[in-house]
Amino acid sequence: MTRPHHPFQPANDHTIRVGEGALPARLFFEAVEQSSVAISITDAKANILYANPAFTRVTGYEAAEVMGVNESLLSDRRTPSLVYETLWGRLRQLKPWTGVLVNRRKDGRRYLAELSIAPVLDTQGHLTHYLGMHRDVTEMHQLEEQVRNQKALIESVVDAEPVVIALLDEAGRVVLDNQEYKKLAGDMRGQEPAEAFLSALSESMGEAFEKARSSGQGFVDHEVQFDPGAGRAPRWFSCSGTWIRERDSSADAFFEPRKVEYLMLVAKEVTELKRQQEEMRMNALRALTAESELVESMRETLTGAVYQMQGPVNMIAAATQLLERRQGEGTADPLLNVLQEALASGRQALQTLENCIPEERDEAIIPVNLNALLREVLGLSTRRLLTSGVVVDWDPAPVLPNVLGREGRLRGMFKQLVDNALDALDDSGTGRREIRIATQALDDAVQVVIQDSGPGIPESMRLRVFEPFVSTKGRSGSGAGMGLPMVQEVVNQHAGLVEVDPTCLEGCRIRLQFPNASQRKL
Image 1 (tube, rainbow, N blue to C red):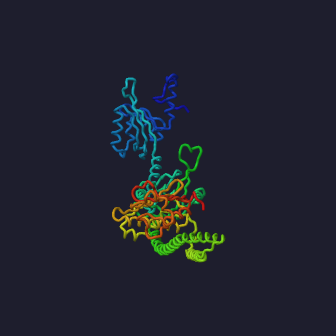
Image 2: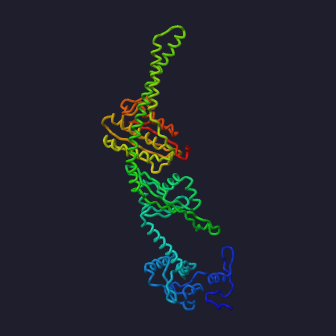
């Protein structure tokens, strides 16, 4: 069937030059006729002179029905007048306009038209026609609105939840979060909560975290702790996570589909519950610490007595050996028997004292969070700190890797260092009374710094203070001079380092380092 001749249809096959080539004029007409986009050409007053078949399919109007009719035939009052004013403002400037209008079909149904109108100029630059192209984008708009509505609904539900919720992409970046997450971000001094959660979970769960990820099973109710510092109490969260996999919607994956992985992280704050548990535990810990300190004091006193007695006994032993050699040479000395009896008595006394020294409690080696341990020590020392009027600057790392060690020994060591600092402040008299305790996660270690504003340690004594029975003026405390040697012993047991910081010019700064759990296998 032959298509009827269209008024705009070329009557012959004249060619049109395009660049250095030439194309048949009919080709341009057929391209417009067969286009899937509704195309219309109007005169300078917007009266329709041509409409292609796609125009009929979109609007319902046959080409013959709209010939000579103004393009406003399609207009609907639901399109704001400002839109039309903007449209004509551009066209009067001989500039194209693109936008979305609410149009009306022949049957009265409204649709959204994504419209582009361009002025057509003659060789002198005068306006002769307008070229309009539009397509029905109603369904696309409806789909977009559905997605927006669903997203808004999800966000409303997520925001209403009283728990921290965050959706993380494969790189750990936050794709979606709720108000509780934003509040937590504000409390964490600029650190991204998701990053801190992932770091803490990976550290505490170890291989189980990667196993949960690779299997897609996730994890449930795993507790992590944040230490905000600045005098604020630590916060505890019970974390659950589920890995979600969906198809990648990027252009790169159109022909080669691949899965994109997200982690839905939910964290419920359990700080109040942990605080109650901590209170009960601290009461038990105070009683245990009092007993441990009594035992440690006995050990220190008896060890000191043995150390002090060992010198005279060694001197008696040396004198006895000298007299025995003389007697062997024929020279008798009446003091020999007396010295032998004194030596035997001294050795027996030493043995008795050594037998009385309480044995160290055998502790299991477990992962220990030094932030939690130091906070316990400060809790145990609260009464003395308040009585002495000492200000504590507690600056913990928000997330700290665990160290492997004996919890009781480490706690006793830190308690000794805090007591030493308090003794120094008591001896310093008036002035600034401050203790600063800070923790920091290094590449493969955990660092603890304890500093006081007391009189400090003379440079000549900085190494000797770790020897038994060596004390500095004003730092004698109430012990037998075995405090820092005990600290050195515990540090050695945990493959750590301890030093008196030589760069500290005000007071005394003790710096300790311990390998983190991933670096040390005991």
